[in-house]
Image 1 (tube, rainbow, N blue to C red):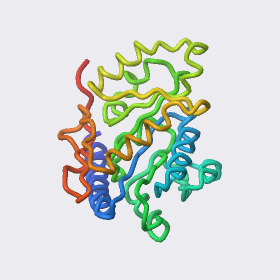
Image 2: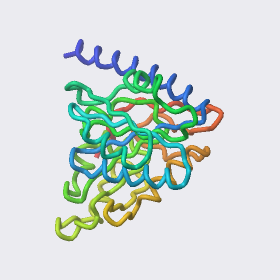
Image 3: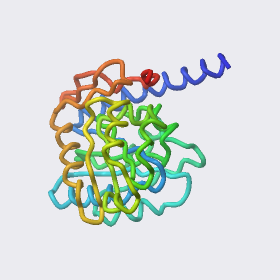
Length: 251
């Protein structure tokens, strides 16, 4: 058991080093990475497609990596936005790692890119422990998933810089208790902003894009409690790296 834990810590430490170097490199280029985490079926791809399309309409140079175990379905959907999109097939791996992100960017990412959205594998467990070199981590959850998810997946929600509730048009039909959800989110991540969204109506699309642009322009991000120290993105590359994921606070 101890050996397994030691191996895991070594893997995470190596990933942290690669992620920090990647973030520094991209920040010097004026590019930030936005890491999107959620369960399968949260509506993450549809919302991201709307955000990408809005960015393209505004003349913002944006790109996206989308990860799945198999198929290129999401890449085809996102490419309709007009943004540069690349599919990452993990061949069974339940999360992305910094080395994969760097490898897929080489020779593909447009030089003038300002925002890179990474749609992580649909999973709220493994991806939460891996820094991808992001400056903004967004955790999404659909109203159909139940308001107790933040308590069930405290590491994912507790490391988020921003939380987005999706499919809000179904809230009443799903019996979603938004007040309870907000209480649960702030129990594991006090003070984090929660954005309501609906890809069908476009609600929340501009807000998500504006939050990413603000970080690009040097705005500080929320400091999650599961991080040992805050991360502040600066256009010149200064600031703390995205911190190691730590244990959830006692309830």
